[in-house]
Image 1: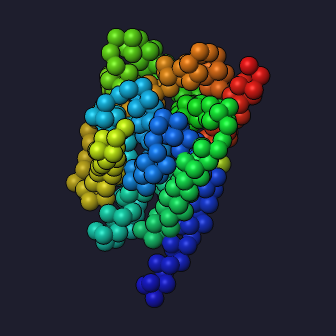
Image 2: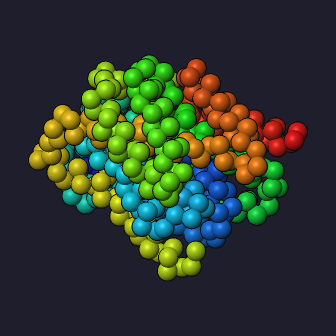
Image 3: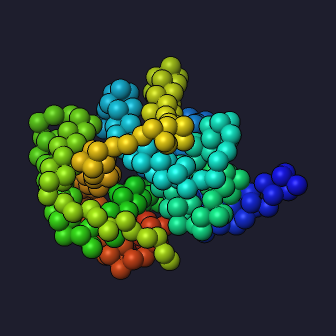
Length: 237
Length: 103
C-alpha cells in the first residue's frame, strides 16, 4: 500500500512539472552552446548539468571562464548566486510531510528556483517527498537532455545561430528580474544602483570580484532602503 | 581548461550548490535568521542578477554593443508584460539572429 501511494504521488509530481520541460530544454541547449563556444568539451558541458544542476550559475561559470576568471572566483560566485536556495530549501522542507534522511539527501539536490515555485504553491496535502521527486525527475531529465542536444548540435549549428544564443543568458536574467522590479520601484532603483556600481567597479578590479562586491554591498544597502514585504511573486500563469 | 582544473571547478560548484540546498532539510527546526539577515539574503538574488547583466550585456558582441542592448530590451519588454521566462529568452535569441542576419 505504502509503495503504491508513493508511486501515485511520484507520477502526479511528474505531471505537475510538464510545463517546465518547455523551459528547461531550450535553456539547456542555450547553456550547452555557450559552454561549447567557451571551449568546454561535450563531456565537460554535460558534466556541469549532471553534477551542478543550476542553470544560472552554470551560465555564469561559463561566462566568467570566458572573461578569464579564476576557478576560486567562479566557485565563490556560484556560492553567492546559489545561496538563495538555502531559503528556498527551507520553505520546501517546511511544507514537506515528514520523510527519511536518505530521501531528504536525494530530494534536496532538486531544489531550484522552478521546483521551489511549483512546490510551495501546491496544495499542502500534496507536498510529499514522492511528489517533489516526481517533479524533479522530469526537470532533471529535461535539463540534461537539453544540455546534451546543445552540446552535440553546437558542432553543426552555423556561427550565426550560436552567436545569437549569446544573449540567452542575459535574457533569462532580465526576465527573472523584471517582474519584481516592475512592481517595486525601490527594488528597481537598487537593481539600477547595482548595475552602475558593477559597471564602475569592473574598470578597476577583476569582473568576478567586482560582481561579488557590488552584489553584497548593494544587498546590504537594500536592507535599509527597500521594502520586500508582500513582494513574493506568486507564479501564476 | 585542462581536466584537473575542470574536475576542481565541477567539484567546487557542486558542493557550494548542493550544501545550501541540503542543509535546511536537516536544520529546518533549528534555523532562525534575524529579520535583517533574512532580508539581506532575499535581496542578494536581485543584486547578483543585476551585476551579472551589467555591464556584460553590452559586450555580447565584441564590436557592436547595440546587439546586446537590443536583445536585452526585447527580453525586458516581454518580461514587463509578464511573458514567461522562456518566451523572453527565445524572443531575444530570435531578435539577435535577425540583427546578425541583416548586419
